[in-house]
Length: 481
Ligand code: 5AD
Ligand code: SF4
Image (cartoon, rainbow, N blue to C red):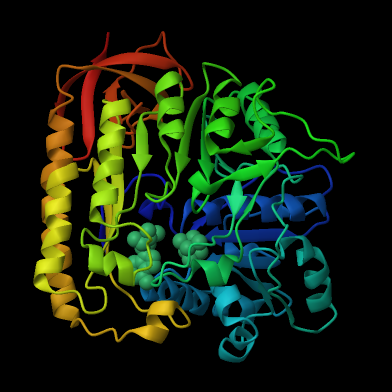
């Protein structure tokens, strides 16, 4: 089992969540059930899918037994993510038996990885659709209605769904994810994403800003800009008539990530801006200075290290080494002293020795991360590592190394939490706490969850200053001041 300390980007508590919309105006009498696994990008894609089908008159349902179309948006990142989906498909079999007209579709990364093989392996599945082919879903459903099974796993160099305004699913009306790019060109040797999500492409900067503005006007107060590697965001401001327009005043012709962050931050000082995921090889001082300059760009960076050892990093094809990563951490600490940092770590990558593993442990001592997602290496078919290297670290060794870094991270998470006691945090109220409607919950600038007694003068969506009085290992507890 993977152990992780959750935050919002790959949220354990949301895995398999079904997405529900307000009833639309074009009802065609058919009901869509869609549930999502994997990263925030996948959850955001499900909103695009729902938007495409809502246009065609589909309503959503939270019970797959009542659905005419059942979609599962899948993840391939580790083997256990795929096992989870296979098991879930078995649960849909009964419903399909009772309602043979039900359309069952597999979307997302597993669909892209397995393609038509899925139809052979899972007799229940009617439709297989990859992440760049969601516009074809209405046609594919028609094809199934007429008795055929359907596959579209074409990847695209252009598709960004920029013109589709996603319907917000299960939203609290306060935080939203906004996808700014798709795909990935990095080719980390362990990773399936370049194969399942295709080439990297950046979305029109103006459509990103327009979406954030619309969200703000609809009452949202926090946007998280999403991409596999946001630091390589790059959009050349070409307008429909072929002319170029500078994005920020007259300063730039090409919009890079720092420029985009600034454009979104300028929507309103009341709109918090977060982003994920940053890449150590690409994160620039310009981005760090932009974060420092705008109060509403949150002081929180997710900067996956994967390993603290330079030889392993080289085998992972991460294109940075231990010193480079430490240098980026130093730059963050210098330019944004209050910045929280989280990471991803893989234990037991091919040929990793105890000493090399220990370099990951000492990297954790160096950074003292606020959060970490930690995984055992899971070989994925088709990746560079699967082709080049033997997955030679025994399961029990991977597990022991994982347990060691998880224990280490728990210490540092607690240490970071404790350091906030006595400080005043600016918190965006998200709603009532899970445990009690006498308490509100919300996040600090640094992305820590904060719990405090309800005060009638403040409502969800407003900012409050909270004095931190104590902590658990994952939560700050305090009162409004
Ligand atoms: N095995 C284990 N963890 C993986 N990740 C990506 N691919 C694998 C794999 N094959 C982890 C990385 C990445 C995060 C999203 O998932 O740490 O940053
Ligand atoms: Fe997201 Fe990667 Fe999983 Fe695809 S494989 S859903 S990109 S985490």
